[in-house]
Length: 193
Image 1 (cartoon, helix red, strand yellow):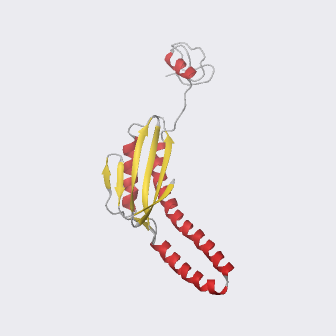
Image 2 (cartoon, one colour):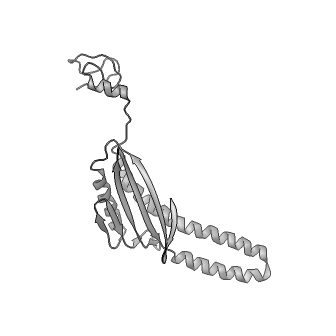
Image 3 (cartoon, helix red, strand yellow):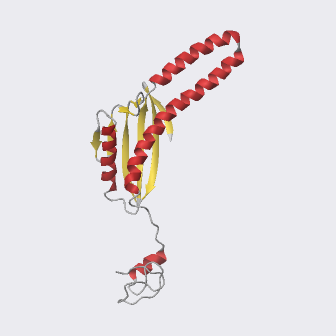
């Protein structure tokens, strides 16, 4: 997670990794769901390049929007990685900062401590306004990914269980000996059909 400054905009980068049982085919489903969510938010200039989705202005709320961004989806060894960068909207932040600076300058003439408290409060609200934009977008990405990955949870299988799965005379769940004619394991109750 990192905040960065580029020419004329403030940006934010973040990466998440989600464990799944099999990542093949899930990238396309996540991309389709994310694009649908972007369209619901009346997003401009949505472009896809394989597993990379770029977008223009995105409306997050009544008066809250981002200037754009990019989402990259990658599948690696039973995991899906999302990596995004977004252009934050500094307009409200800059307006708040300007008004706060003017008030602090006026206070400085009368009380230095009140001015310092004003600087701390301004810094806090600046951070909060930027973080709120990131929080809303992060929820949008997470909702798309979780919708798909929750259907394919990662289940870790031990090497011992892998051996049981290969042996037709053992139950793949508990390792008890079973006959080929058995339909249910007598030890754990697993259906063997």
